[in-house]
Length: 328
Image (cartoon, rainbow, N blue to C red; front, side, top):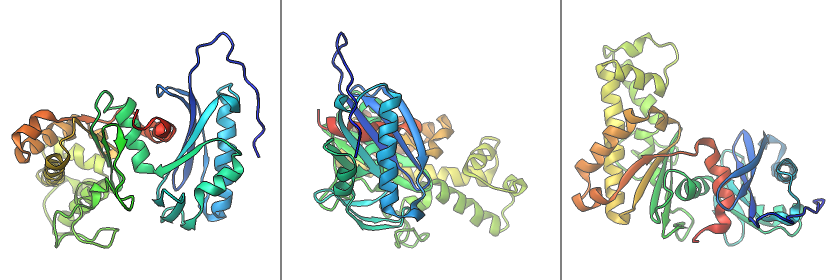
C-alpha cells in the first residue's frame, strides 16, 4: 500500500498532475506529468518479466512512488495514473489477454494494480496508443484534432486519434496499420500473415530486403558492412549505392501507398512519423511526402501534413499520463 504524503499547494497555481507508466519488454519508464504535458520527474527500472507478472506490477507501484517523491509532490496532488503496455487488452475488464514480449496471458492488470495503488484512479491502454496520444496532444500532432501516428521501429505501430479521442475499435485493434496487407505473397509477418506493411517499411523489413539483395549477389557497398543496420542502409543510399537506394525507395513508397489509403478513409489533419527509422529525418520525410502525394486523392493530400514525431522515448509516459485528458 502507498504511503500518502501531504503536499501543500498554498500560494501556487492549481495544476493537475498525472503519473504515466510505459512498460516495455526490458524497461519500465515512469514520470509525473502536468496536464500541459510537461515532465516534472522521471525514473525507470528493469522490467524483468521472467520474475512473473506480480513482480512487474510491484515494480510499477514502486516506480510510481519514486517519481512522486522526485517531483516533490504528494499523492493527494496526483489525479490519476495511466499505464501503457505492449499487449492486446480487454479495456472493459482491464485484463491483458496477450503480451508476447512480457510473456503474459490473461493477467488482471487493472484490478491487481488497484490493489497496489490504493484509491488512485487508473487507466490502461496499448503502448502504441498512448505514444500516439502523447504525440497528438503535445508532440508532432499538437494543435490538430484528427491525427494518425505511425511508429517505424522493429515493427510498424500505429494510433488513430479522431476528434482528440483514440480509435480503439470493437476488439481494441484500431490503429494496427502495420498489419495492412500490401503484398499477399510477400514476406512472413510475426502476426502469421504474409506481406504486411510491417514486413516492408519497418527497420526489420528494410534490413530483410537488403539482406535478400546481398544473398542474390547484387553488387553493393553494403557488402562492406560487418553488421548491417537500417541506419547504415540509409547512409549508403545517401552516398548513391544503387541497392541501398532501391531498398529505401521500396520501403518509403509502400509506406506512402498505405498512408494514402488510410488518408482516404480518415482524412486526418496530421500524420506523425516516429520510431527509430524516423531518425533518418528528411531522407525519410521528403520522399514519403512525395509518395503520399503520388498515391493520395488530391484533396486528401492537400489537407494532410506529414510530420516527424517530437517526443522520442518520452511519448509513452506522456501519453499514458494524458489518458485522463483524452477527448478534451
